[in-house]
Length: 113
Length: 111
Image (cartoon, rainbow over all chains, first blue to last red):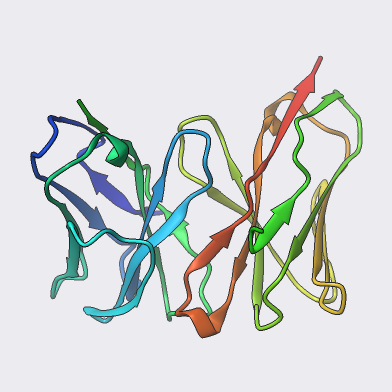
């Protein structure tokens, strides 16, 4: 069965650079979520989209923005990267927000040097 | 205080043992409950949803007590492949559907 696809899988950036992470949800899933997991931490919710509209916002820095496109894929844009942004970034998708179980992609490991 | 609290672990058990994980949540509006497992540096994978009536999937049994805001996971006949971090997860529908994770409990099953 098709799973959530994330790209790139690994990304190395310098401080103050920008990064774009991409997520392709499971076909027919209408909701995308972004989570950040720092070393030794549990995943923390960043932002979500339902039917291409932002549905909820968590602890996402103002330097980050995201959107969901007409084909339901989503991109997380990160600017002015800081060392503390180094983490695993997971995208998850579900069908029907609020009720659906969420299925996670393999994540993007971002390292900021 | 975290919104979802779990046993700190780690749990080190021999193969074949039965192990139980506990979890409490603070938001009484929470409506969906899950156990996810996460292997090192991999994505969380849904293990099972948890229902008020309790549910079982093979060697795994999950229980939910809404009155006590308490969730449990029982693993019987532990296998080496069960070694992972087990995450108690809550979805509070009045918070837009986001998942709220416990800090996870590490399980190590030894031969």
